[in-house]
Amino acid sequence: NAGVTQTPKFQVLKTGQSMTLQCAQDMNHEYMSWYRQDPGMGLRLIHYSVGAGITDQGEVPNGYNVSRSTTEDFPLRLLSAAPSQTSVYFCASSFRNTEAFFGQGTRLTVV
Amino acid sequence: RKEVEQDPGPFNVPEGATVAFNCTYSNSASQSFFWYRQDCRKEPKLLMSVYSSGNEDGRFTAQLNRASQYISLLIRDSKLSDSATYLCVVNMYDKYNQGGKLIFGQGTELSVKP
Image (tube, rainbow over the protein chains, first blue to last red):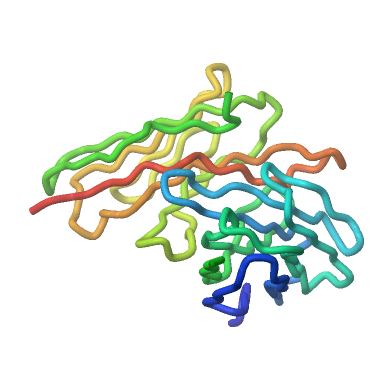
């Protein structure tokens, strides 16, 4: 019953460092998305994918890259971390027009 | 204008109260609508989907008004355990003309007091 698995759960980065947040799902969902959540802002869509090899930008894509080489995995790359990227990151997956299932989140602090 | 907007909250209510959350969305082509619940910044979890005919699950009732592009959630007989943030979620069509892009409202915090 893995569902959506995100790693790591916590991370501290220094400004300018790069890192990859991992997301994997085992439900054969075609849709996968990355969101960030900041206090009072709800969840904002960073990038999403409609299937392997197909991605697009969401509401707040700057500073992040994604790729989707398999149905199961959708990693999020921070190219050069900035303090403004301190946030809680959630990965989600779904079938088209259905509910999304979420990972447990990654709490990222950039110092 | 934000694509999905919710009441700002927070709502502080006594146990047993009835509370209503409202949400509006901007894209008239949206097909799927949901209410999610989020506890203490844990991952959001589906509370209920919202159907055109309205739907009820125990103390929870969801309504959709497509003409006004408006969604509501009613909680009757509030319990302490209902304290959480409630998120309105609407699917938006993407450039691939598929409805898988889910956009969240900013959430409304509910605190139920004894």
